[in-house]
Length: 465
Ligand code: SF4
Ligand code: SF4
Image (cartoon, rainbow, N blue to C red):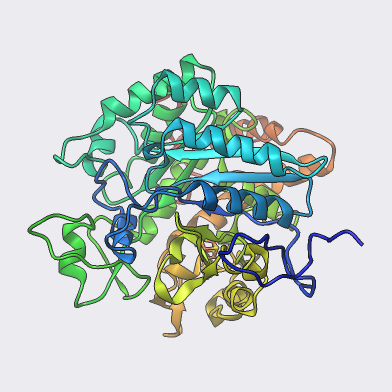
């Protein structure tokens, strides 16, 4: 009988082909692996980027994925999937540190190992600095979806996103974006929310929409954890400098650096954007958290952070080491190496399943009785280092902001869900919101719950760019 996808083997680096374990009843049909072909190495020096410190996991090594690891990775990824669509997701560090040739080879390996009927999508997260015509023509040719990291207009972006001489990178990133647009490459914007830009949600959103022409965007909170022992060094940053004692970042400690976003501020940032989006841009601009929240109204959880359980987003280092999650690339969460054990065996391992189920099983009593639990699910375990109202450990540091966002957006989300069930486009919510705004009048409290008058808060249409 021909070997099935789930056929077990235990061979090793000898070059014999590894296939997944036939005895894996719990193997997931699909997962979203993030591959780091140049490890955590980067060509810039963002102040909040604790991934820079992960180079210390593999000292004295070149941090470049070999052809053998590349092919092994892609073959195992494709044969592990039992869904017709597979995403090949590249990130870093900075993946453009590998040359275009490396990714041409990757596309060839995908074609070589693609199963009949499998559709493969490539995504690529970059800081944009090294983009040129060759990169952009390549992305266009193979339909890559490129995520570009931008933290807002120049001043906000340049606060933390700096090069090794501490110079802002805004101009270089904009140059990269222009090239992506010239070549017609599909792109989205990844913006971190941090101490410097946390009060500028609406301004940043308008900048992305109106100046950069972005149709897809996501906002990721910066939370850099530290202990009493490490906080001083952590505040200095994570990169390797001759005069700088360096800490390997791990998800420990209940302090945060001064660059981290505040909990309430994160929620307000999201609400600022939501109040603008729900009045002008539904169906036209796609904000990841808004999309997944609407999906969650139907019980579909597309983002691990707000799903009941997780564990399907492992990270692959350049040498084949597989970790439980991109946020847990640290010794205690190394599942194994794909040259020694098939990646599906590692992902279906009891260890990784426990990692994923722990998200649900470690919820605090406050989360369990929370009215927005079905949408929030306690957030990401890496952020659960605060105390709940009851004094219980393990509450999400962002809880106040998450509650603010999920409660604040809920009425509009429910309206969109109802519209959808009735066969109408969710974007009709904009007309319903306009009617409500008119009825409320300019001097009533704003719908966002800020306590300010609507006119001076989110009803300020006159200042719309
Ligand atoms: S630990 Fe957080 S980021 Fe990682 S898979 Fe779980 S929810 Fe997602
Ligand atoms: S909003 Fe707070 S209490 Fe509610 S589920 Fe999220 S983290 Fe838990």
